[in-house]
Length: 211
Image (cartoon, rainbow, N blue to C red):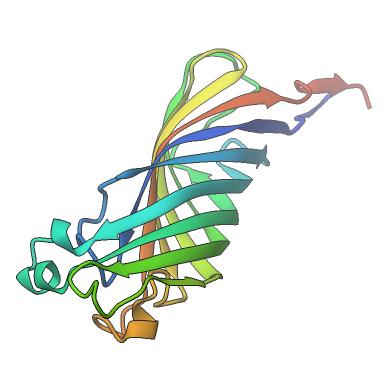
């Protein structure tokens, strides 16, 4: 007898929030202030790893008036960036997460890969309203996602996870600051998605075939 383990797929949704780390507004690393929604697909290759593809969209907003730095308070910039991200990566489980076994299980996990985001930002300065008009432009670029989370199979076919993922972008113009020579031009921008995923599993169970 030879056991052949089939692969199991997951498809589901991401629900959470987003925040931005850059040259405008607050500098908190995890502080969601706008809703984020997305779709997620995973191809589980083993109990320890899977390939994942995701699409997430959100508005990224920041305001200098919310910053604890007086220099930013006095400057008075604010941004709103409409962002769409497509990401491809690899997820690694700390413990075996065998979806062919329906018994309850839980594991922390990490994931990374490469992302491409489409961004359209609006930069405004209320303090300079008499001389500054809104700057509207696009800032598409690549990013490197760094995700950590914990997940559990809440039913034989549904998996619930909580995760947060920082994206290091290969751009310093997610907010338009590069165009206006704002902040530290040597530091690239970041954005963060934090929330929950709910995925449905499907695929054949293991089959046992005679040689």
